[in-house]
Length: 112
Length: 117
Image (tube, rainbow over all chains, first blue to last red; front, top):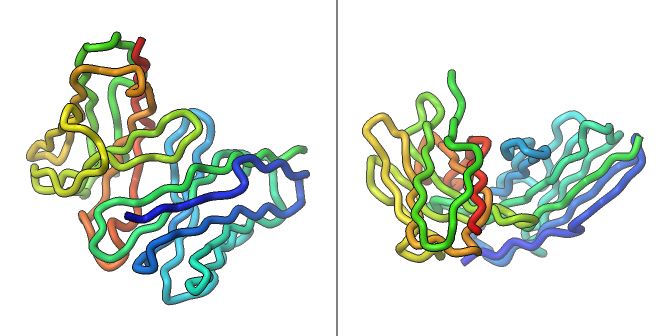
């Protein structure tokens, strides 16, 4: 089955700086890569996703890049704000799969 | 449009007991999946229900079982509880069980935090 690894496990940045979280996956059939944000005591919520037919996707301060050859994808948050503090999970899935394979999460702390 | 709701939010059980967790799917969604999230880990897939049938299962023993009802709500039952079952149990609904992008976007509930003593 698919195996998703995520790094770093914790990340602290100053407000206004950028944050980058990286994930690798093992199954070359994976073609859907979402990122979820989970605030303390809250539900995971989708913040951005990318499919394998594109290499990059942006939504305001958030962007995701995908390198299919290397089987890795990354989340980039620019101009970080304290409300960006949360745990971020990457995930992967493929055609016909009925579940997402999640990474172990990155706890991002934005220091005011 | 109502979101995914789960109950109870917290519960404490002892080893060997049984527990039932409940989930109401988001309006318009016919597929419910359950995930276990241990402390400091990512969610792990338990199983998915579609049209009241189990439609895929992760690496969990048979003492984890479920149901889906005609209104698409669902239950997760865990028998013979073990200490390692302590976790946040997340229910997620989606508009389809699978497709070209796998299961697609999942809409999660707030979870049920189970502590086994």
